[in-house]
Length: 552
Image 1: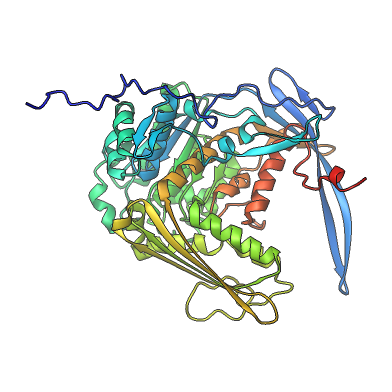
Image 2: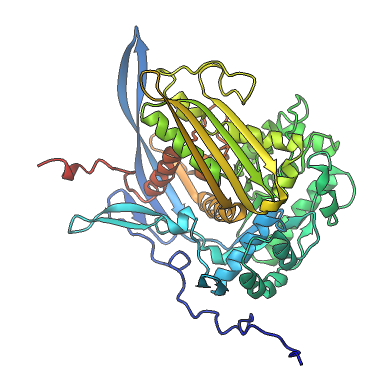
């Protein structure tokens, strides 16, 4: 007779395997962040205050002669030391990314270990820039470089402490959503499921069929009723306030990780200014998208909003509204596997003096995101965000390289100055959450010679995306605690500008201050973030000069 109580012996929450391994270094708590002893750095009970010189140069060109004048502007930064209790509200919490992120945090919080065919596995935050990457502080007494995790430079939220919640158009409870996503190993799913079930069902969300693919309609059974967009805005604002109050939170980061929407048309008088956008919401205008409505709700509640998808959530009116309320926004589109690789290789080619002629990218994606992107208007949003990721790197060498005019195939980036750039995404259900990609780089290398680089990569889409969501959330919370003043011009400290372009490293189409250039170079994005964090504690930015090793 078969036993009535079948068990593998590794059940949660009574599992004998829970906690048998030490906490992974990327998930360990290190309460003592670095201490800088310098006249440029002051610590008190509330703040870390630092002095920083922003060094640069002004360049003029006259008859082909470049004249460079160095300059230095003095700033002070003030960072609040106390890390507030932080909530993360995800739109699309029941999707692959949302459910995987929740399961990851819960597995780390409870140190749940699980079995695969390779043996016992333990939870970690590998893939997180903040938790698994380091910065150099200097050298020790033996002349050896000393590194610390990025998260040790300033007080930051520990991922395990995030309070999780959010909205979804699907009513599936989060344990069932995790099962539906088919991302995590079965033994981990089984053990983390009771903890996921405690998170309950997502809050009802907004569903405007015109903005996402028709094939998503079957999932849409958890909706805020009606078609009144002002009522929907009020409902979302109330949800944010209630979540904040119920959990005793100091800060709520609102994060769009739902399906890609079609682009919104930018219409004068509708979404071009803050007042027009608010009026359009009251009138339930057809070009106000769900993501823009969520962004406006967060802005009006003075809680930061991050867009992890490629659509133009931040229409000009939304940016104007964020500036008016001095609220924080960031985006767009999570930069995971293939795009990072494309950025790195494009930067390598240009920095090596090699002329890129064409970049062709082919993607097979089988999860629900791929299904949604199989619709033409939603794919167009992704196409736009993916096609611009090499712009600034190629621009850096436009003085020397002029690519031929782009033909009928491909997406033109710049009309004659840039390489052809072809982006193809196909929905292939059989690959599931495993994204298959081929990149082809065609280049001119020397005296008319040609070179082709072909790369095939396979990755778990959601497992690459979830650490990006973590990093973006934690950095966003930190940046809300940083203030600055320009010495000699400002008496009082002020918050950073509303558009958090320091988040660019994790984003495919970085949102920047209107009128400024977008930086897509991974190295420049990483260096900017590291330099800023160091500036907040009175340290100089990256120096790979290593002068002491190059002189007598």
